[in-house]
Image 1 (cartoon, rainbow, N blue to C red):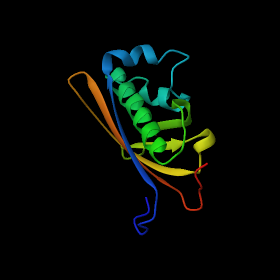
Image 2 (image 1 turned 60 degrees about the vertical axis):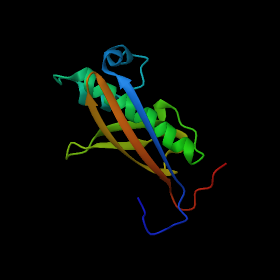
Image 3 (image 1 turned 45 degrees about the horizontal axis):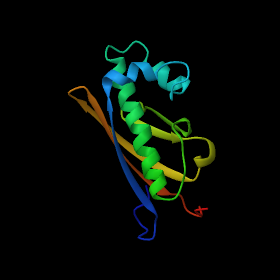
Length: 126
């Protein structure tokens, strides 16, 4: 994210998801992209991974709303970078309008995500 402009519009969000709920969310009508499901496939703690992705999507929706952009869970993809860190890709009507970063942790049957976003230059809020 750009740090050289004090005038940048920034937002933050957070979300918590119960790991026990993640398996049900992975059904065919769930909020996951094919890439997210592929990365979850074969993991020993698949539901923990998916719960983190749901939390990341919800936190990112909240952060985007804080800068005036409306997004649904289907407009956000959260996958692993080569380093293993979660990365966010914005899709649909928010693609190319903001930059988002997310951090995910889990403990005691819950996944927590924190997201921050910043409008990209020359993006106006409608």
